[in-house]
Image 1 (cartoon, rainbow, N blue to C red):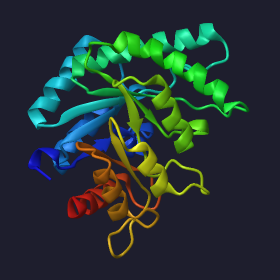
Image 2 (cartoon, helix red, strand yellow):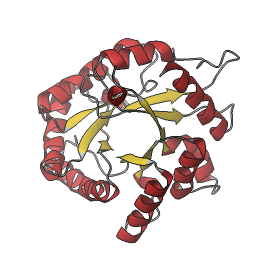
Image 3 (tube, helix red, strand yellow):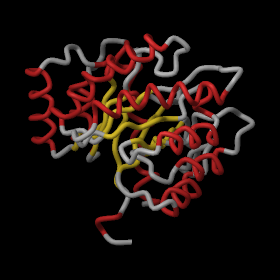
Image 4 (tube, one colour):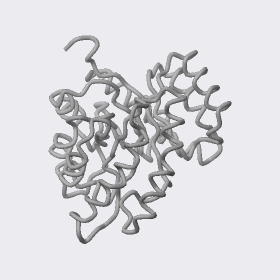
Length: 264
């Protein structure tokens, strides 16, 4: 593996969501934490932005450049259901995502993450509607250099075969997965699931919850996961997404960073 193809470490803003909701930090402070911890990439959350206006975005980009941190992607929530049974609502949801494609361009991000959830009695019908909604988003993103990433993030999206079939149905190189190591139902083999989703991934989320005395993650075999990630041909950033409750968030982030550095 060449140096260019090596995996790198980023930080998902959600890792500091407890601090954010307690008013102890904001998204700019999270970016500063990346610099302080020597983490080279940052993944933003749209709902954490105080104002997605040009001045704020340029300030964010300028500070990231000063810190040597790449702004990688924007996790987009609360913008409507791209697979809604009502066509008008699908189209509106697609339009709602346009501003985040624009924001991603200003920040130099490589992708935005969209949600496709739902608990549908007819998965095939939902797949068709989701594909239609995504095509509206992709049409706007065409030529921008901003990819669209789908995460296993609840509902049908946490079924790896269903999500893979959706990506294959849309068949657009701008669309890819964002496999999260942790967002699967208990009955799902998470390693097989990531193996299904990893090819063509736009990003990768190293979900973590707790760490033992041996410094390994207690629920997920990270060494096995990274072997799967490498075997898929993925290169780029693996994002720390700490969601544990026992450790303070920054301590959990540091523990995950130490583990990833050892394995990478």
